[in-house]
Amino acid sequence: MHPEKPKHDFEPKIIAFVCTWCTYAGADLAGTSRMQYPPNVRVLKFPCTGRIDPVFILKAFQQGADGVLVSGCHPGDCHYIAGNFHARRRFAAFRKLLEFVGVDLNRLQFSWVSAAEGGKWVEVVTELTEKVRSMGPMVEFKELALEEQWSGAIDTPELKEAYEQI
Amino acid sequence: MTQPIDTSIYAAVTAAIQGEAKRILSEGQVTAIVGYAAARRKGSAQPIVISQPDDAQKLIFTPACVNNLAVYLTKAKKEIPKTGKIGIVVKGCDLKALAGLMGESQLKRENLYLIGVPCAGVLGSTIQPDTELTSDSIAPKCTECNERMPPECDFVPAVQVPVNQGLEKKYAAEIARLEALTPQERWAYWKEQFSKCIKCYACRQVCPFCFCEQCLCDRNKPQMVETTPRPAGNFAWHIVRAMHLAGRCAGCAECERVCPMDIPLNLLNRKMAKELKELFEHEAGFEVQEKGPLNSFTDKDDQSFIK
Image 1 (cartoon, each protein chain N blue to C red):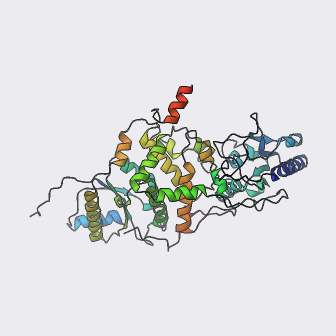
Image 2 (tube, each protein chain N blue to C red):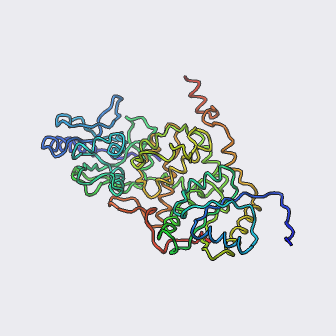
Image 3 (cartoon, rainbow over the protein chains, first blue to last red):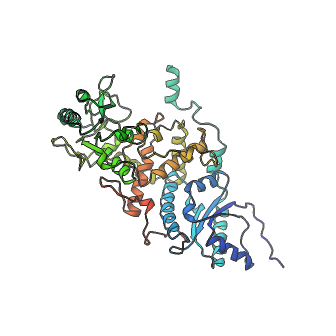
């Protein structure tokens, strides 16, 4: 009945922040239409993409996500009139900031998926999962979370010199 | 090459500020004036609030007047604006912060008496206060400053401010250098910079725009940003700070000046300002804007990054 599942060395963890009105319904449609998509994605439902704070994305990476998907209604279809327009600007800026501090933007995907686009949801999720799978685990933020206090270490010459002078 | 910067106008500026402060205080136009006064170390300056006409002679303006006094009208001295009309000594960069605060309904123009200062530049944060102002000792923000004459103030000393002599733009150069690196190198650079952070929150304390009664980063249910000075929390704090200031920061570089660990915080702010100008054609300026770039939108915004 079921197609053969390929075995992979690495299964990425994808966190999807979706809006309840469009993408969540779209993902639901994909499910009720019995479309197959990777089980790597964990869906988190929000009222609107305008509710999704960039800090949620940071938190997701710190807690071990390898990729993050943010998805909501197409422009003009927002249940709250303009939430996705605000989100579009905010994420455009946030992407630039992440790029500047050295985060690979291929791990972060934004998309508009309407309640009728079950197929597009499958496509977006599959593509992101495969892309992140080929990139391997996201180690940068995990290392940060595991590392101990840096500022306690006297490891720079200036700090050492200042310490000696006390 | 070190080139000296002409600060000969500062004596005239000081005299004009003192005269004007004395006049408006004795005429009762303002109840208090926030300005700069000489501090105990030679050549240094500190903020002062005066309410008596006789104290007007304490006011000065020198290259050591580095503070952005706008912060005294928002949080630390919240009671000051309530006492009536307030005079404040502002440089061009400080006036931008005030314009931003007015746009965010934190201050009202009619409650302020602006004493604008024609400014040729102030000293950098790590320079001794009695040092002569040169292209080396000048604050990096002043190398990029083109607004040396604050416009639309209630009073501006009538002096001719020397033009920016084409100093090397330090932030622009550093941003260009970082942008040319690979993502891994940039990550390593910021990891090292943020590793110095001790989470003293001086950058938050001194920023005129960080006026939230309760900061997102202090909340613990849910805790969005780790509060201890550990790597993950440090990184998140600085990204959240840059994001919350994007489109609002006026570029006074106070965050960078007060940072005890010398983290180049204003670099992030300048980078975001540059990007927002490219994306949404928005720039912090002297005119009061009701909507910033991140709380307004058009239906034609770029969405090439969205599938």
